[in-house]
Length: 188
Image (tube, rainbow, N blue to C red; front, side, top):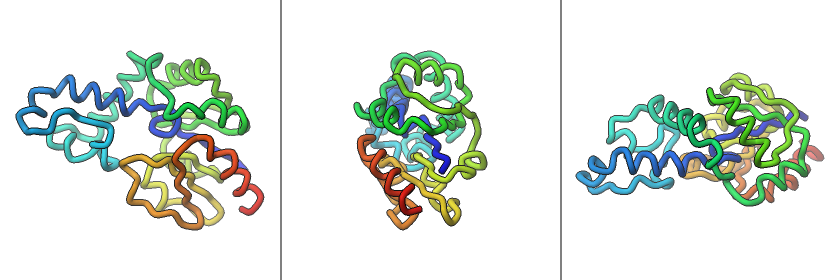
């Protein structure tokens, strides 16, 4: 079975840096509206949440800011939890697939985090949907997976309305992944 791991929001916690940048850049506007600071929990949907929209930021504006953060501050991007590297070293045979434009920076980050992978590919949902097991944070993929595919959805504020079902399973920490993936591979 082919396994993919997404990067942003799944293994890399760039969204906390993004929320800090939004708070700093738009402090005055957020304070005027009684909405300061912009926090991670404010990213309540796949379009970066109503606070981002209130500031006039489109989803593409927000995504571009994340790409910029990777370019400028990739060494500062933390993992989403302490167990990421250990869990991924245990799994070893998977691809990293990201739609991020900053492939070089992400590959350097993966190396510094000691995260092994089989292949690094850049592409969107159509590429991701060619895999059997998707380790992701994107809620839109839940409606698009086909029979025989499995979506392991890292719990994030923007995907909490997606219920678990036979082929969609939510996880909260990286230490859960080796067991979840082993169970899927035993009983696809």
